[in-house]
Image 1: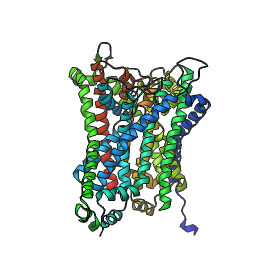
Image 2: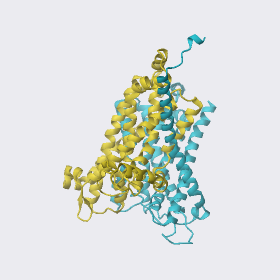
Image 3: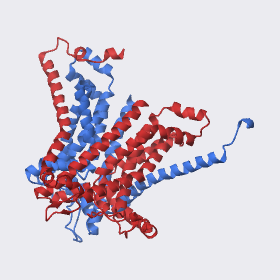
Image 4: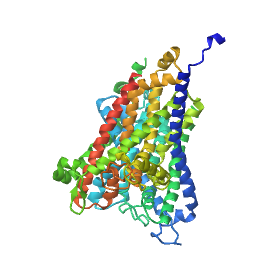
Length: 288
Length: 321
């Protein structure tokens, strides 16, 4: 037995050892920022998460002993993400239905797919510029509507491409069975295909919502920011992400602290939505 | 057999017994979803046309000279983009240089058999989690934690390597280098995830062949997997580059926002997205808005080109495998 065994020559051993060390230390380097970030957000943010934070308006800069919070930013983020979801989910899901159920591999459908991919690659700041050109300039003012529109353009390609993937997973036999029972395209798609793909569509919608909630660049010059409560959809609006940006750049420590508290809140929302999205599809996998 | 079962217009159309309402419902449904697809597909065009339209005052006035003019003076309505183009390219290049080896290393340990599978998935998940953190929070962390933490490192580069033109200025916190580091952190997940996919798409036969010839695990990775995956890795890198070029918030918060061109990476700089984020809110003069729109258009077109290259590189590889 021992005759068959030849130890690796030292040069090979050294080669393997050096590569192992390099690769593993580089990979460790990739994980350090994540851990440092999470630690910083929790340790710097949680001490400032008081009840006031969720119920009060931001205190004017530099004022001490005044209750201060970002309730208006929470409302702003929720309202703008809701506008974005209201615009992008129906449009994205219908587009995906067209691609899988009607267009399939036609030239037009491939073109649509390519353009949606292009849209998903557009930098989020350019999406903000687009919303600025289409809503802020004509209406001559920053508005929650413009912010919501910008976020919907961010969400649209995510929803479309992910929904198409989940529709493609529906077995063709189910469509044929439905057709065999006399259902047309509309009924087959709405009652059979969408029902079967529902968890997948829900997951992609939640992931898109999580993405939109954390976006800052599309909001910074569309919804702008506001120290006050939301005054209608045509007025400027605060949002958690822009609040973090503005208050991080502020020279006042109180505002910096509020930015950290908002960061905990925002990361909490994003992580919660992501986990929910994963849970929805996991649930589905175990039932099948 | 499955070919024959492919639903076509003819075998899915309603049976004759169905009422005309259902027939109308079908074509109506088809029409609505077609319109939705058309609307979705038109948005990129719409985007280009509108941004171009609003950029026209600046394009007409400055033309292509905009690209190599250095002055940006709002009061005198003089606009040149060079410092921003320079800053965008340099910070993205630093990011790519730092992130590429790290991303590929993560891809190797999460796809090749150098770790038990039970560890690979959690590591891949954690690395991809970085991509889920909103960029403004990465910027917040960069500004208050990373820059102070790397202050000694920047000082070290200055005091020991100031004979190099890239380190010849006194650092004071925000800098091109810090923007590059923060961008690198943000694009590592992209490179890692795509390279991992590409590695997994490479046929196991290739590796088995190498093992049969007596290669060790690492030899098979270095001499077989990596060369086979090289175009996919380039694709991942260009996709990451596309992300880095357009990344706004995190860069704005650590780059320093100074409109100067300096060879020193320890000097603050500026980038196209950072400038847009800082000035759009206050821009009112049509020429100023136009100049910003011009920059947005350039950024859009360059990211498009970079992403198209990435798509071609990744697709050819995963298709061949």
